[in-house]
Amino acid sequence: MNAPVRFEAASLPLPAAEPIVRFDGVCRLFAARRGSPAVRAIDDLTLDVAPGEIFGVIGRSGAGKSTLIRLINGLERPTSGRVLVEGVDVGPLAEAALRPLRRSIGMVFQHFNLLSSRSVFDNVALPLEVAGAGKAEIRRSVGELLDLVGLADKRNRYPAELSGGQKQRVGIARALATRPKILLGDEVTSALDPETTASILALLADINRTFGVTIVLITHEIAVVKDICHRVAVLEAGRLIETGRTFDVLTRPHHATTASFVRNVAGVELPADIAQRLTHEPGPGRQALLRITFSGSHATAPVISRLTTVLGIDVNILAGRIDSIAGEPFGALLVSMPGEAAVRLAAVSALRALQLQAEVVGYVA
Ligand SMILES: Nc1ncnc2c1ncn2[C@@H]1O[C@H](COP(=O)(O)OP(=O)(O)OP(=O)(O)O)[C@@H](O)[C@H]1O
Image 1 (cartoon, rainbow, N blue to C red):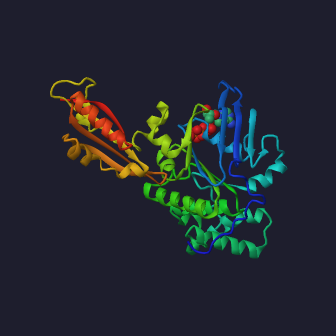
Image 2: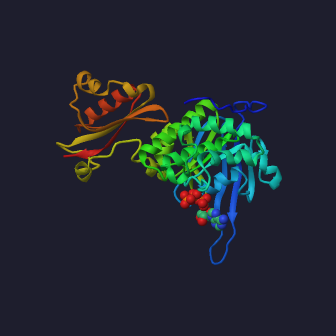
Image 3: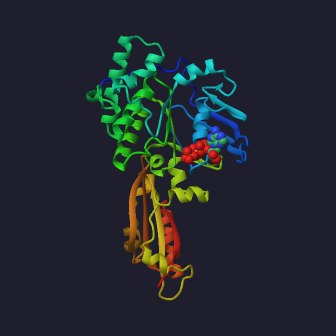
């Protein structure tokens, strides 16, 4: 990263406990129209976003994600309840009063929304022109922003000459042009391949760390949440069904929908041939299958040696994975061991003594 972009600090720093965005019992109802029934796009949503965090909102198509994000910048108004941005109730604000709010909120889009007839430089300059900035200021700011997103050498190119990742970098630079305190991301990586996705997420995390910009990302991709969101909310049919620290929600989902999102992210799958033979009943000659999950400071616990050397239990590793969720180490192991009750109990209590989660998932002959 080159020349630092200067973000103006909030005139009065918010106390840590004060949310930068608050949804307070918000409903957004779309009235019935031409044969379509009324839709409760957001249904009694209460949620806080803390200043400086990266907050993810995940949900399937139609869950209400876009409506939620549009309520933050006043593009949608609540039918009831309040949306507070830095303590200001944005629902009743007139269009003129919304303008400064929108300048303090940048937005990044799935399909970039760049103007094809403008160069990279001119796309990033656009919000500054609209805000009435002078030529010298625009030149300096846009130069800094293009350095920040790694596109200084593409300033005179046009969108059609850029890759998807480069277009999204222009979109991010443009969103940052008015030095917003909040950046809203609408499926920012959905049009990108996995490698480019990782580089765009790394850029957003870097911007968040360096400038303290609060980022709210809506997505249907759990990988986005897993990689960079500090906290996450899960939406279903407009309702908040689960929220918390990303690590907690992904490793211990409470709701079936959340569990279906995280299935392939925070765990290990049973090998198919074993899954077919799995039964829930122990029996003579059957091996017990144990799923062990370890996290944070316990991720390096000497699991297998504890079971084999200390307890003398023969353990077979069937599958395993070590990963990181929102920067915290996380691992999962699937092992088989003799299925007798005494052995199982000894193993599970030894693992729990190491602060690991262990559960018997079934038995195989
Ligand atoms: N302007 C509108 N008029 C009528 N219904 C709407 C309007 N905007 C959204 N909806 C409905 O509200 C619900 C939530 O839509 P929303 O776009 O917020 O969901 P989403 O989670 O962003 O979906 P997607 O991931 O497909 O974009 C949907 O049933 C949608 O059809």
